[in-house]
Amino acid sequence: MDCQEKLEVPVYTDVDRETFLRDIYPLRRPAVLKRVPLGPCMRAWTVSYLAQKGGDREVKVHVSPEPRMDFLHKNFVYRTLPFDKFIQRAAEAKHSDFFISEDESYYLRSLGEDVRKEPADLRKQFPELAEDFHIPQFFEPEQFFSSVFRISSPGLQLWTHYDVMDNLLAQVTGRKRVVLYSPKDALYLYLTGDKSEVLDIDTTDLQLYPEFVKASRYECILEPGDLLFIPALWFHNTLALQFGVGVNVFWRHLPPEGYDKKDPYGNKDPVAASRALQSLERTLGILEELPPDYQDFYARRMVLRIQSRAYLRQNSDTA
Picture 1 (cartoon, rainbow, N blue to C red):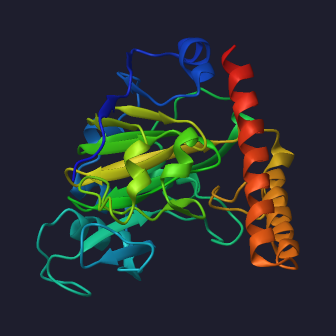
Picture 2 (spheres, one colour):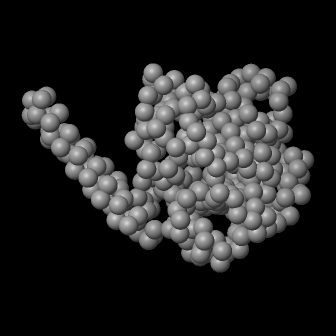
Picture 3 (cartoon, rainbow, N blue to C red):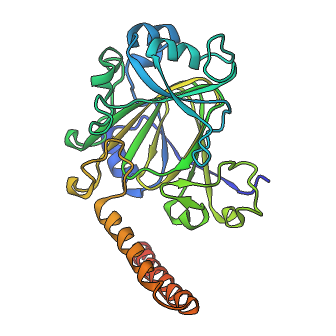
């Protein structure tokens, strides 16, 4: 059933750096930004132009027989294609050349040169196309982490997840629906790591996921040229309403030492958070030395302690 009220993401027009840093960024809430200059990409990035300029550079892409990609059951495979062939296939509804089926869906999340060490950067992987895209200067140059191509077949839906860095999603071509959930609703999202187990967010099985209905759902439709500011830790789920090309720009808003240096994707939890979670696992292991009823009791005490601390912090932040 469609179980959640849809809350609108606020929209701002003609936003410059000063306005963003003064009126939007401090709120730590998603925002759609319209009429921010993105450069020649807005008129230039047709399928034929992208294929020509991107050339035959090989890219690793997700290929799925279904438009809703499922990270739990891995209903997709990774395949390598020349960029020009990939972009042509991704724009098609039916394929004469395919890996799985003629209506398979494609998704590209561009990678760095050394995928294990280097973040994606359009200026390095696609220099000719990068010239067309002007990154909004809403952060200091030294904070820049990555610029990532996001290219989707029409109808492709990505699972709900969070990132640990702030980012701007620039929708260059095509329309995209984005659904977002606050970090404060994490308890209702049935998390496995940084991802939600609830794949169908529109007609959710509430017998399987009864708490999901408590999460507040924020929703927006991105038109070509729109930017979506997604603060770190906000969960997001994207649905390509049309074939679309976008660019994600991530930047470090915490001190550099707070991030895992061996994280080219920007999705590993901050160093302190990782240490805390590891400590929790060790603590739960220690509890196993006790009988089950004691384990249950002291685990509940720990939950109460965490809840009271979070509640006190929340009240102090809103006071």
